[in-house]
Length: 408
Image (cartoon, rainbow, N blue to C red; front, top):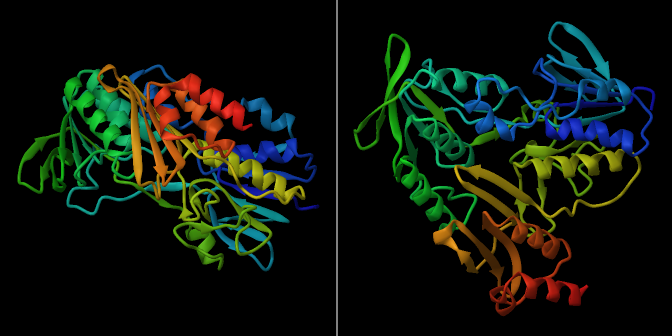
């Protein structure tokens, strides 16, 4: 392929796709395009260690020498304006087009905008990249009061980090519980109690109607109940939107993201898509999903590289996720969609327990707090398609290991 493969997006998915193409023996040109000017970096630490340490630097996904050593043409600071599918080329505003034989869209997602008065004030920040993290780090160093809008992973990670640093933190969540879209009620309730014990004020079933300012900088958030919350920093964490517009303008099929098949191909076979932006029929649940996780991004990227190299494998990776919120390491494996019962095992009062989710008699997911060994065992069980009985789960890890070994 004389024109090679171009990858749009230099996050976890894009960098892994470039690396995996070389690992698969692909010897055509590989161009990696990123909008940021920095070398690609890990994003999970931005909401935790990075914002609390003024000396912290981004943790690079790959060292600078990696790209040259693997003949990967990394092009930072570029924004793709359009895709010309007929000509198989990318268009850039004010720049020469680039032609491709294969294209991988790893364009990710962006924070959902806040549709309220005052959303554009200084001191109102969403976290998606290192520039945002640097701004949060700078502003949090001089403020007293922080309001976090949204009780998802990002918002709660930042809330715990800034509260531990001595800030007054209030979390405002529209739903009636924290982490409502991503974990079971027992986990959400546990996280809420631990954060409250840390001194984080939590308001659920509540929204913010407007933000007030003082000389152009946010000074308070006014809730739907009329309460005025002082705030020199407002973190907006109300979800993300897939960056699918580039593909949509080109006529590529869109359905809650860029629609892909089991080999990561879009509706245009020479164009593939991976990561946060990719929407697909999940092999495990049978439902359509778009997963926002490092694991999903990197596993899909590996498969896309195999597809381009001539493989025909279908995507069958077991999804897993994690979040560090204060003194809680949350780890999730599988998907809870369709689950109709669960078992809680362990010691919630000691901040160490698991929730096993079943759909009928089938194990579909495990959520854990500070039980990494159980998480790893869960990944092995779900990866092997093994579903233990509830009785075996209650007998503990040794019984689960023995049952898994016997089933193998």
